[in-house]
Image (cartoon, rainbow, N blue to C red; front, side):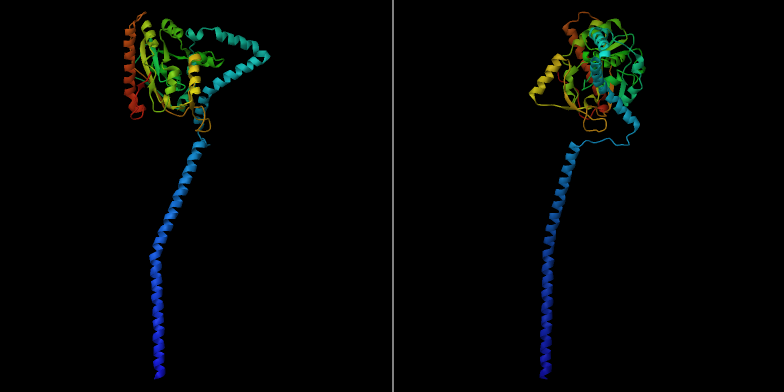
Length: 396
């Protein structure tokens, strides 16, 4: 009996120990269950922070790479687009080629004196100021079509023009290079003569361009003339259906050629209005949408740069805006223009009464009519070819 009682007591103690162990285990597990969510939340937060920091570092690295490293053209670029880029690059190549070839020929003994004779002819000829040349087949060269498709460009006619009347076209804006007027008016890439039969456009350019060795032969063949008063007077007096096309804003307007801006230098430019009244020529406003976007214009705050710019405008006739474009095989850096659509719109003619000695009030009146007509032309097409909220501003 005593043995059985002692065994029962031992079994009870063992059972109590087991139950106490189970309770301790339960408490431990409950404690672990209560502490693990907090630690897991902390770990999750730390992991998410690490991920976001790594992502931000990667995004910063990517932006730095994009800002520094150029974006190269893909290898599978179609041949037609390659040809378009080539024709536009030749526009700059002609300038560099002309200068270097002239210097090289002056250096060689066999070609030195013929080159001197050629330069003497350029210095004394009055051809660019006396009507220039007009070579239709040069305007119809097929490579101008590739040049046009690079942007691409477009020419819009709003009114018919009588070929028996005299016209003076005011072209806006100047932009950096004036690619729109060059291709849409200076060549037949967009069919100027089909849209305006009998009206021969004669773009006015800097004396530097018409005096550049070798390169001048190309632009004279396109019908370009010097942009001085003598040249415009000659065309209006002696060539009835030859219409001077003057970029009114000139070098000063190039400094406003920023993306999204439509700022014109026109308020004090009244000389072309006086010339039109003297010859009884109708004034035709022309505006090119997209001209101010083919390059990125940079505005340096340095006083030295501003002094150099004003010196060049005063002595050479053109400004030196600091700009950047794209390259031949990459899209980030270079002097080639960006592929931006250029749409040249030719407005309604503003008739004038011939008066060889117009008064200032008459010039002011016609000038105001011209500005109003240009603003109407811009507002008519800004919804199609300008961004929302962009307006035309006459700043000078």
